[in-house]
Image (cartoon, rainbow, N blue to C red; front, side, top):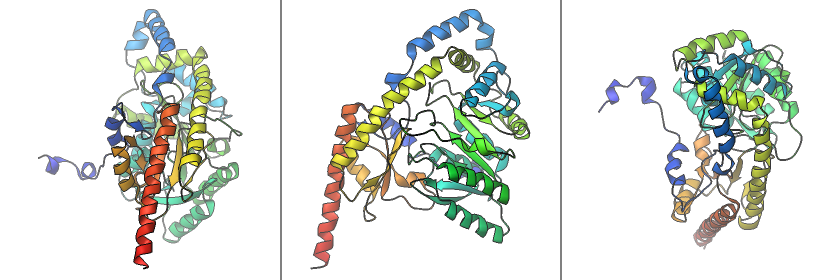
Length: 410
């Protein structure tokens, strides 16, 4: 009825395949590996309730009034200290508080992307990042990955090709630690090379970091931002995965000139991030509650990650491969090319199991034989049972296709 009224930009907007699965996760009989959100068992309800009551009693106006667009000064000072834990030295003038890191993705795209501008991403890549770029009609160019993250050789090929065509990408979008959807982490040497390439070819790097604090094994990698000498790296942080998602508090770290432009963009979007959430995060952070929560989450999700990998080894066919993440929420499964995970998903739903198909994370038509498993939501027993059911379905599909191929050759 209203299609003719929508802008051309709005007409091109598409819903996320992941969001469409949220209704499934509300059905108690479904074992859902679809949603990548924090487990309700780990939400720090008691601590948040106690702190919220105290803050309302002590500073009602600070909790309930508007805040500056750039964010409350106390929160930005806390984020300065929080960033220092990763060895990143910034001042409050380099920080913009956002309504979750998703708003950060939107603001970066709004400020930098014109229609048909070239933007580089990993392939596969986070749907929220792809969606933000698409909403501003950016031309996404996907670069493949291997076990150490984005392939620098393929990136250099794309950069050289674009240079020959007189094109320069605006930025490259990356989830460097425990990538969504693959769980992969970019190797340190590749991070250094990314910054050098950004300097050489004069593009920006958008580093999205929701998961780096959730490391279960191995050595922490320095952020890409650690190697930034010219202010080319824009860093997005979030308290959603490591503390609580409901208050929607994220932040952007960038050169002051970029921050000032984004403040203008945010003023016209939501004026300011919610004051209650900002005060709550600051108080919980200064009291050490956030650091305590992060330690708790590491132990909690490590067990889920371990059971996921053990169950995949136990129940999936030898034709399947998967990543073995050192942190985060996800593992990425690839099946033989003759299988289509959308068809497998339909059969899985009949068995009350859900996941997200690989094509949701691609822009080039690939990923038909892959899918993402998120282990953050199901409990331990559900993880094993769900993977058992999936393994049975996949084995059946492989056997069926193999049988058909034998008959064709008869």
